[in-house]
Amino acid sequence: MPLCLDPFLDKYKFDVEDVEAATAEMICGKAAGLDELTTEHIVHSHPVLLVILAKLFNIIMSAGYVPYGFRLSYTVPLPKVDTISSANVVHNYRAISISPILSKIFEQCIFNKYIECGYGPVAPSMSLRRCGRQSRGY
Image (cartoon, rainbow, N blue to C red; front, side):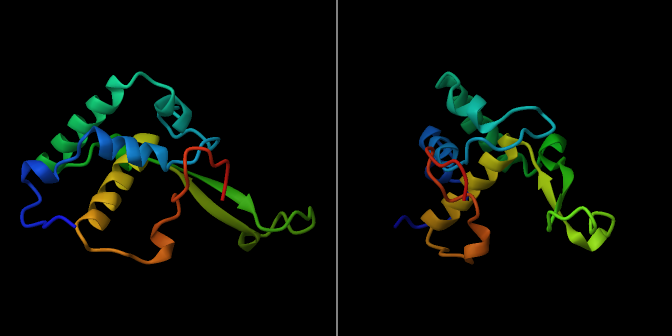
């Protein structure tokens, strides 16, 4: 287990392996965010994209600023019950937020680095996307 003394040291920055591991943990077949990108776009892209994402994530961390597009999402109401008679009642729906895939990968990189630095394990509810590349759902 590495010692995490200073988060800005080079050995604690994100590298291509961090981004690749985070991408592999994303679930395929999910809805696209406002950027209209899905996990499949990242998984099947050229490997140089992982290098670019690692550099982007390091710039974000060193600047201490999360891009505006990473903070955007849209909310979709999903019915809790499949009955038509209760479709008009608001509390019979649950809301899910669809976020951009790049912000999810960034979040997963931070989560993985958090665990790697010895701060984990965290609450199970924080690891919702802990599935392999072959997963199709929960």
